[in-house]
Length: 369
Image (cartoon, rainbow, N blue to C red; front, side, top):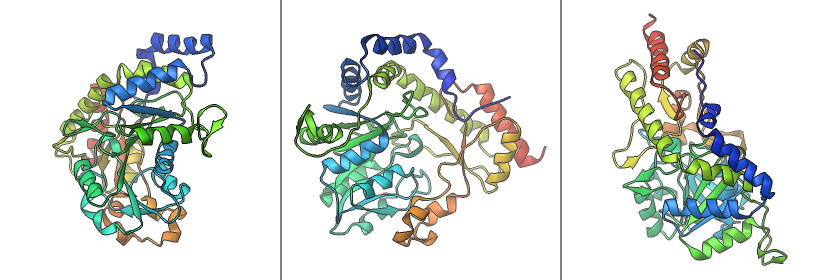
């Protein structure tokens, strides 16, 4: 049996007619840049979050960068974020001119350890960017309280957590901005790069939209220098189709994760993911911990099962951040987990028998039988 980490073709096959019709409509109308397809998606995405604004942008990285620039964060400022994430979260801080300050992860949920944030705050700190990692929200209410107490901007990186919830409130709606990636493998994925920012702040929305459009809200009337970061019509049309299915897909992901947890319960040496009691987890990734990861990964590959590692090196320990002079002891949890975390196949169309096969292969590896 061959089981990929993610099966995008399986998803396409379930909505093929609607997707094909949406693509054809964009071609027929030559509505490739801006236009009604982008406007429709922005309106629908904002409404589904209960927010006033959605600004479509070229990708999730730009969504964070534009948010930082719209808030005036730059040279001499510091922004706190988590040690375990994709580099987009931190590189955008540097690109904006500020300095990234990293915090270790919660040992149970892999998101930023909120109890360690305040000790990293200095007079230069201007914002905090928690990441709702693997589909599970960070302790966002407590993080928001910290930000309010210290007059800091809260930007939520929701790239892996489309429509996840903390205490029945959707992620991306707690701070000044929620940033999203629609990279094809995400819970809500385009067929290319795409991203968005959501917000209830009118002034921020104007600045973000302006910065993303060469510093102009009206063509040729440039108020500032900005960048070119646009959600194109093709991706917007595709996302509008997929938006109608996201709740079901997220529900299927959670069902798959619960089955994994049930079947792996009690298997020696396998630490399954914990679900915070106050959240709606959408399981972008299903990540276990195991001491002999490479051997297990090799065993699964030999049995046709694809896996991944998210992420093999904590951000502050990458060569890109050598200048910050961090060591493993600065991030004991992230450093301990870096050689143990392993992502198993997870997508809405994953079948129960596929999960049973994966778990069966893992049990054979553990027991040698």
